[in-house]
Image (tube, rainbow, N blue to C red):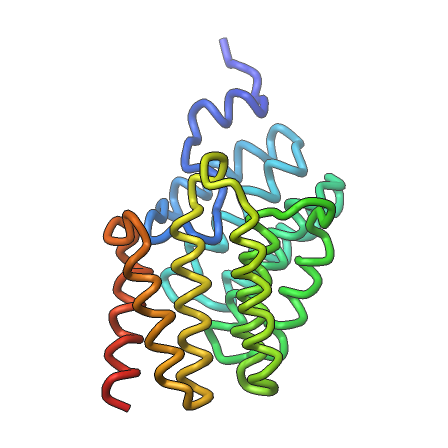
Length: 227
């Protein structure tokens, strides 16, 4: 007897989880993602199909398949619109922006991050708000350094209003923001201020556990010492 394909059955067997901005290097295989995509389509679930396409896009981006990643995210956006899920729309726009940013297309990235931020709940401080503000700051670096610094500081101030007991990525998010702020200071030639941000990132409790951000902070500190 064939079991019906439902959202619950897919989640039970397909446990790679949703892609998150600070997921680090935990990337599932494209085979697993494609398998989940086929099941979600059979279930006729636009939300789950959109989530799976977004995850598949993240896999392609991780391995440098930029255009394929953008195709996946474009399809994910269509399914997100059909499911009427603002969070999925925001996440997909962020992912598209992140691809553009990795390719040096700062203007396109800024537009995607701004649209994503507009979809995020604004009544209370959230992880997504702080994360996207920091990404906006990075995307702004090539056109307006003062605005970029302002966005990073806004992200940092919003982060401080989050509850560390309720946000498991609290420390990692602070490291990400401070690394981005330090990078912008370095680009602006304000090396002392950049160095302070990288040192602050390295001093965050449990920083060593976040290997990507830790390495980025160490590299930034070296740049500020030798430039």
